[in-house]
Image 1 (cartoon, rainbow, N blue to C red):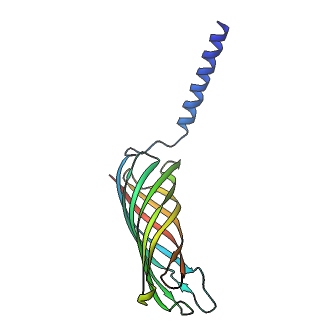
Image 2 (cartoon, rainbow, N blue to C red):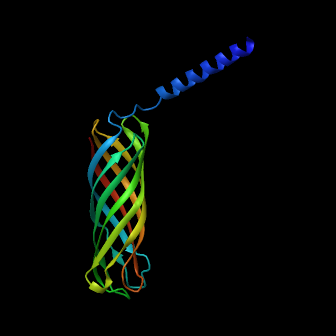
Image 3 (cartoon, helix red, strand yellow):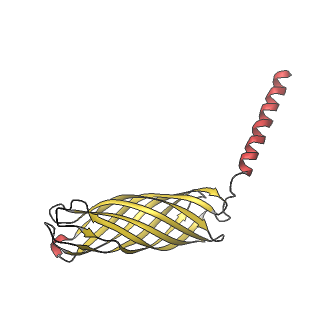
Length: 194
């Protein structure tokens, strides 16, 4: 009898603790699962990964992206997107000078973790198929690149989110003597959940 009573007390304590913990957490969104679409503008940061003396790329230019996806639940989803990194100006030195325009399509997994009412940390990891168009046609490039992103999300209402993020792409290659560019973006996105 004493053992059974102790078990009941323990279970009641655990239930009370769980209830208190749940009460302190932000409530899940009303439409936590379902499709979403979004668009964003940003700042593309790039330079030569292997710049010799006198040669570099300056791609601190406006970038934009479009995307759509599906939230499996309030924490996880999948996303298909398109990103344009703008135009990088490359000064000559080994790699021909001129301009390079980079764009790509991506498939990724996205995650979200609520930290306060209407606020959440967000993350993304995926692969991008990119192409680089250089003004010197012999220097065009293409390939696949893994990337990751971190940011913060604010829900303006039950359907609309504002997301600020930093995305790291790393090095992308040009078809000229194995030369490479480094690309990253700072972005601000507006997202609509259906």
